[in-house]
Image (cartoon, one colour):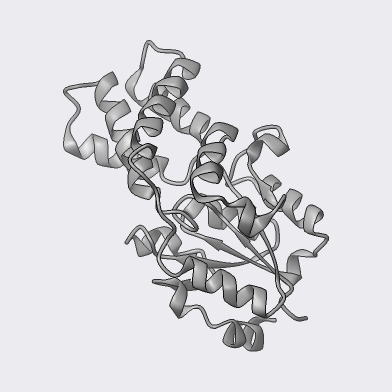
Length: 223
């Protein structure tokens, strides 16, 4: 079976927003608990990595016994993220070159992201993602806001690009994303943009950067 398509995660995989979301999470947690210890902050932040926005705020509320509602926490985090986004975002180094290589090989491409519709709109506007993926950019609003590690957004993307799971590769940077891709039956590359290899332990193939992805090797060994 030949590789026919690549499905990308977005945050931390296509666009360099990992620090933005980490900073926004830390700021929101500190707003809720100004006296939080560095150890607890780090532990909560690690658990949150790769979760969707609402799931993140649910976890913060539960961990900190916040008096704010989940929706209030969501709105506060969106405001923080918007301020950070306004300072500018960029593609992950190597993504554009890798994407161009996929087009030369005539592979289909799509995005399956845990992002909410608002965050996706910001990213699409600032980096013109439609120029890369056309209409094949799918966030969790397409699947009743069922977020990763559930496979729903990947299964939806597969259906929309008319490919089977064994014809595709997913590229992810988080444990929840990897679980989602593999639950959908998709071979998953973990890209170490966060500097945390442990997060990628369940991936089928791990790289530090896009330049390390060898599709010929992957095709020969795994497809």
